[in-house]
Each structure stands twice: as structure tokens, then as C-alpha cells.
Length: 230
Image 1 (tube, helix red, strand yellow):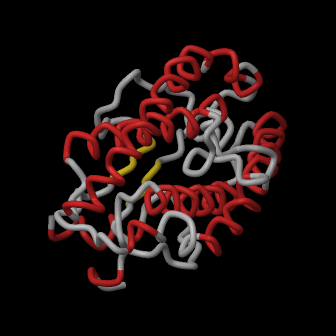
Image 2 (cartoon, one colour):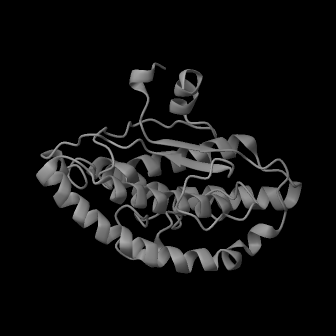
Image 3 (tube, rainbow, N blue to C red):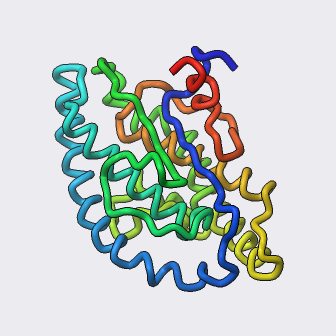
């Protein structure tokens, strides 16, 4: 894969080598403080996104402070989701942070776009994204995911869809064997990566259309390609 063909939204994660067999049963309780904070952050995210929409429409630029804030909310959400029921990939408690946390096992990077199309901003987040949203609805369960859901209490994309089902299977296998199936983990990460790419696109963070491609595994292909020359 060449640098020119990689998608700019990079979703990386690493699986804990030793996961508790039973901690996943109570992670929904442990994550409640995050859920409360994120509910307010997603209200702010929606408001900032509306302002950013008009800024892009008029100037062709996403105001950098707004971009940084919204990306921070997405990063925070991805860390909590990875810890909890979108992956169960780590037992390390997520930090309360909007900043990039390179030491945490779940990471999200979206490069700041210097210019965005003023015409595309009118259609890319709903009309052009419609085929992708239909797929994400299957992956996430009825489309209950943060990029299109105004109910900020349900910011997570694990809503009983394919991701939720596969994570449940992984949790049962973990409880019985003490191991997370690596093949299943790679597949779950690929599905989450697909959802996050579409989320960033519909949030107007990039004009690059998400690929209809399942990139499995913890390392994003873009990271693998860019890292040697970074």
C-alpha cells in the first residue's frame, strides 16, 4: 500500500497481553464517570460541529481550535469504547483527557485539513455518506453511533449490532479460556476502524471518502505506511 492510497483517519490499538476473565462484567459500572462527562462533551461536540459547518461553508476551513476539540471528544470516546464494550481490548482505565495519549492502547489520529471543499460540506455528511451509514448501521446496531446520533447519552457505537455481538462472544471466550481470540480481535478492530472513519467523514473532518474496505488488526495500514518516513 502506497502513502497516497492510505486513508487519513488512523485508528490504532494494542491488545493487553493479560486480560481479566471477569472484569468485563463490571466495566459498565466503572465507566459511568466517563459516560457522564462524555454526555456533556457530545452536546458541545454537536454545537461546535454546527458552527464548523458554517465556517467551512464560508471560508473552506475548519477552525483549528474547534477541530482540536471535536477530535479530542472522539479520541476520548474511542478510548472508553475500547476499554468497554466496543472491543474489551484493555483493562487499563481510560484517562479523562481530550488530548492525544500515545501511551494508551487505543489511539485515534486525524490530520488537520488545511482546506475543505465548501460545496461538499453541504452533502458529504448525509447524502454522499448514505451508503456508508447503512453499513455502519449494521455494524453498530441500528446506527446508534456518535456520528449521526443526536442523543448524546448513547455516544457509543455498540448498540447490539455486529460489533456488540462479536465482543460478547470474545468476552465469553475470555471468561472460559482466559484468552482473547486474536483472529476475532483483529476483525473487531477492523469493524471499529470502519465506523470511526465514517464518523470522522460525517463530522466534516476530512473530504476523503471512506474506503469500502475492512482493514483488520490493531495497526492501521496508514500508520504502518507513514511511520517509517515520519
